[in-house]
Length: 105
Image (tube, rainbow, N blue to C red; front, side, top):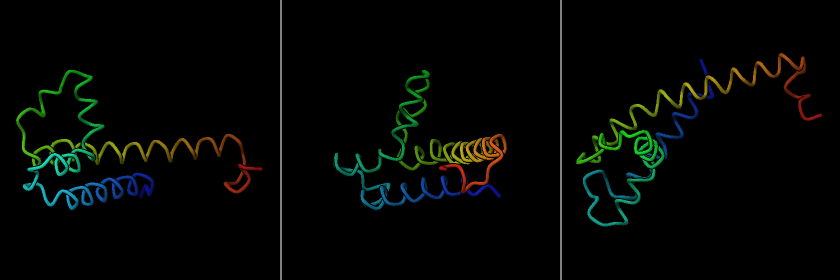
């Protein structure tokens, strides 16, 4: 099991739960303050969608659908990022021929 990818996914889910809780739930976004809290976990992904020309995917969607669409794609992407980072670290350690404790020396 890849722990780095798993931890990244858990941290993202924790961020989503905290922000949804601060907003008072997905259906309670009536004030700008509540909408801001709901927006935080989705902001990087929607920024990326806008910059690649797919911003229309998020037009007229509910918060629940936004979290399912964008957040649902974010979890496998974060897991893959964790897998890649862990493999890179292992590769660098093998190339240096050092133990993890000797890297800073």
